[in-house]
Each structure stands twice: as C-alpha cells, then as structure tokens.
Amino acid sequence: MSEDRIIEIDFAQCFRAIFQKWPAILAMTGVGIILAGVITFFIAEQEDIYEATSSVYCTMEESYSYTQAAESIQMMNMYVDIITSSRVAERANKILGNAYPDSETILKMLTIDSGEGENKNYYGVLNSSIVIKIKAKSVNEAEAVTVANAMAEAYTIEMTSITGNSSVRLLDSAQMATVVYEAEKQNMLYMVIGAVIGMFIALAWITIKEIFVVNLNTISDATLFGKLEIIGVIPDFD
Image (cartoon, rainbow, N blue to C red):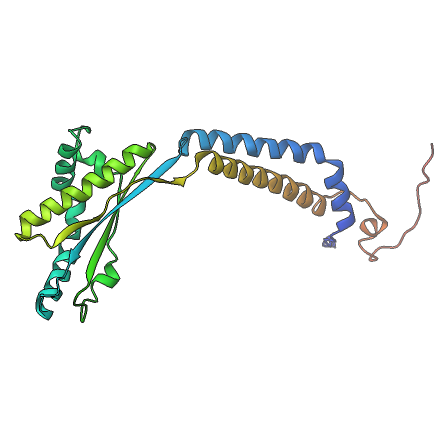
C-alpha cells in the first residue's frame, strides 16, 4: 500500500535556496532586461511625441432665437466628423504647401475632442458656444503645431462652404506643443518591468523546485511525517 507524500513547505529552506542561488536569479533578471530592451527597440517609439491643440467653436449670437441656437449646436455635432475627412485634410495640406504626399498622413496625426456629451445637451444654452479641440501628434514639435492650426483653418473654411454662414470660427491657434510621450522614460520603465518579470520567474522556479523536490532532507521526510518508525540511523563518518 503506497503512502501519498505530504507536501510540507519549509520556508526557511526556500529562503536558503534562494540565497544560495542568487547568481541564477541575477542572471535571469539580466535576461529579462535584455529581452525587454530588444522588444522595446523593435516595437516601442524611440522618439518623444509632441501634441499641439487648436480649437474651433460654433458661436451663438445674442440675436439667435432658441431654435437657431439649438440648430447651431446640432449642426456642430452633425458635422464634427468632417474634421477627420479627406476633404478637410487635403485643404489643410494645401494650406501647408502640399507638404505631405496624401491626406491620410495628416489624418493619422489627429485626435478630435468634440465634447460630444456636453454638445448634445443643447437645451437652454443661448449666448453660449460649442468648442471642438483639434489635436495633432508628431515626433516634431513644430510639425504638430502647424498641422493642428492648418486643420482648424481648413475646417472653418469647409464649414462655411457647407452651411453658408460663419458660425464656425477659429477659437485658439496652437502656439506650442507639449510632450505626451517621453521615449527614454518609457523605455526605462519597460526594462524595469522586464527585470521584475525575470526575477519573479527565477524566484518562483527555485521556490517551486524546493517545495516539490523528492529528496529526503529531514527526518520528517524519511518517516512520512511520523507514519513510519525509525529502525536505525546510518552514522556520518568523516
């Protein structure tokens, strides 16, 4: 009749094993750093990314009636997607002197913050305005600023052409760009994460190996934790 082995966790033995095998832990930590560095080099952005913001607004004059105010805001919501259209991007590219090969290059740089939830709640907003922020990202600070401003200008021109009025106007031009992604800091963070993962794997492996090892290290292991009697002891000779 076979006896099932009882798994007893000897924390002291686990800590001793971890201390004794610190070179393996250090090596695994190094492997984690190297792998994280390689992955970061091929996948992560290696340059800082800048973002510039310009804004346009739909104005509601004091002379507007309740219906006109509601219609103006509704119009802004309906036509907000025009900002990310190829037509507006092409117009912006012309403003920039055809600096880009196609409109898609410009559109990939854009993020639009239309405040959609607030804009749709347009009841009782006379003498107010709706603001749409046009954000452009680039690895070049000056490029982010010029693209954001060109898109804002192109959008106001396009909306004037569509609606036949000048209710959509430029509110703020981008003057400078801010850093939204710091490549060096992010790459360091990825390598720290790689080091932590490598160390964790090494510690887990050593601990699990110690817990499930089949060697008899103590008297309790030899007697199946008291289930067998000790019938003799082999002396340890030098």
